[in-house]
Length: 188
Image (cartoon, rainbow, N blue to C red):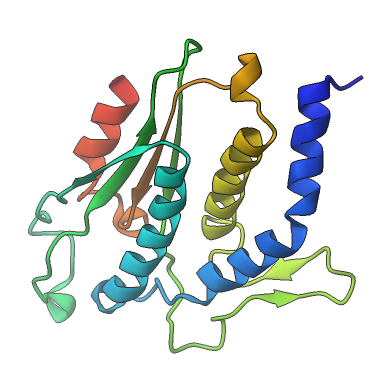
């Protein structure tokens, strides 16, 4: 049997069904694959998610990416670009222990290829698209879950703890630019 708070959270999530799908369409439609040429879409996705987390009471920190190791990119792709930043949104002050939610904004899919938008099955239960599950869908769900907890009043009855959401943009190349930030946040 679900508690009152758990029932309120479930109702909040159910009421957000259309918004969740719209948000997934938006993020999957941002071309964050294909290497260095995707920084504008990565920045847009990062900004949209961080703005929502800040509205939930998080404090945002942007950490500059560590420069790439010389061997990271092949000579044919050896275009020097600024290392992508890592954003961490932290909500502290609760008496309960914290949780770290970490996810990447980048995908491996070429934004010029045929696999570049969210497609949903006619039954509305199945969707495909670049990052639909890994990891854009996961980030959409994580932020929506934190929003639902807040809207359902979970904090007011002690059901919510501290949390950090870490967003990196270099997972598909091994997280070399963001590794120090990930390790530091996981250790805190």
